[in-house]
Length: 448
Image 1 (cartoon, rainbow, N blue to C red):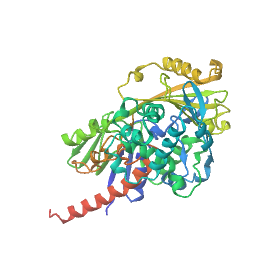
Image 2: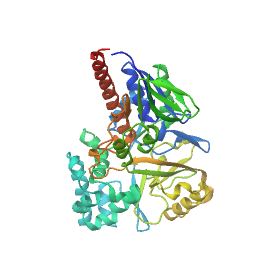
Image 3: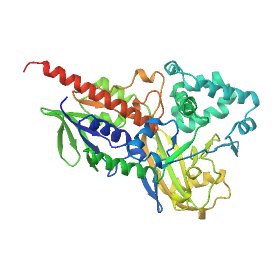
């Protein structure tokens, strides 16, 4: 097959990996990203005098697609592993739920409730027919297996914490995907799950990845916003906001579904309807540097209503404080719908609200303990796995010749994480090249 010139629009981990795979299949590739730096949701930023991940990420032993990419980048030996602890803040108290004994002692649930909760998790970890789970709501499935009390005390608060009002639309496959990811390591022979990170965080991973793409001949265009992709007599024209237009043989758009609609005006009404039907969850996530640890839990799940954030992620329960200038890094996420008014709230107001909420869990925390605070906002983060989700997804191949859509909404079944994003890119790269080979072969059979 002759080498074609591909444009990959969107320079997150998905776009970067897709550009890598296309280039490895002998294609010419230009990667276009609106931000100056590549990485998207996995990108790093500065908070105080520390550079670390803008959002919280963790690597599991079972994340073989991510670990495979790290091998290619020569970073696999830089992974640091440790076991972490889990906390729950419920009924105004902080509890540890990090092992079987602590689970059995967990005060908010009675013994029968705990048995049903344990059964639900065990049962989900052994299910394989995820398609059938798409046909019922997460609430219906959880109540059936865990009971009404456990659902109201544990599952419903957790669903609301992750999905907000969108929890009512989520299918049971959403819960299955989360449990399956956490239990994947045990199914492959590991006795227990370990959490890991690369020394230097994603700033180091992305710097190495960017250099690697350049070294193998991928053309990178950072800080370039695409306005639209349209057909031209020569192929597909990528029109950029500064007024330039470049023509490509093939274009892959990796942005969230609402952005695809605006970038690709020549899609059919049916295709646009499918894209518009993807329901998204956004995030407002605060990062803060402290001069002290909190409780040492990697994640503290919050089941009490009224707190302004939906979990506490104490990153330095995993990452050594020496990597962060001796500071302790904490993330305070709040998952909201893309239209939520929280996106309009000033950073200073969010800081006051979040710190007041954090003091409800840690009353001894003072303003002097806070060394830096920064807020990230992203409207389209997670595509909600609604009922019959896989049947209604937009296809990679579009009605516009040479135009493809590959985005995180196509991670089915699964959850949004770096490992499954890389898996999608690996699979899509091979599919797109094979499709182009077949299309080129058919074109050659057509007489001029």
